[in-house]
View 1 (cartoon, rainbow, N blue to C red):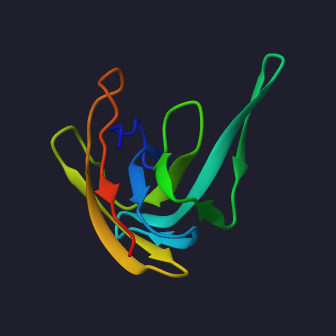
View 2 (cartoon, rainbow, N blue to C red):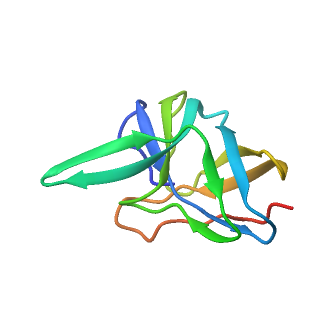
Length: 120
């Protein structure tokens, strides 16, 4: 996750490796934020929009959340996080159940951090 510049929101990126049949990511939460929702970025001409995704299908294989594409938006943060901190995310899948992961916080310009989850 990139260190946010304010308490209003932050973007998080990760990789999910699904070794089984397709699953659906139905909810995400974090003690750091009021809400965590997947978004995808769409560019039309010079306009960039963030489109919320209500339920995200995770196909078999690797799904990457990355800048410029699908990512997680954490909103209404309850504290400042800085490089070196870690953020807890709880991901709930329709088949694989609940998984809790830790994402390291880095500065903008650094390579995105990666947390890999293996739903079963």
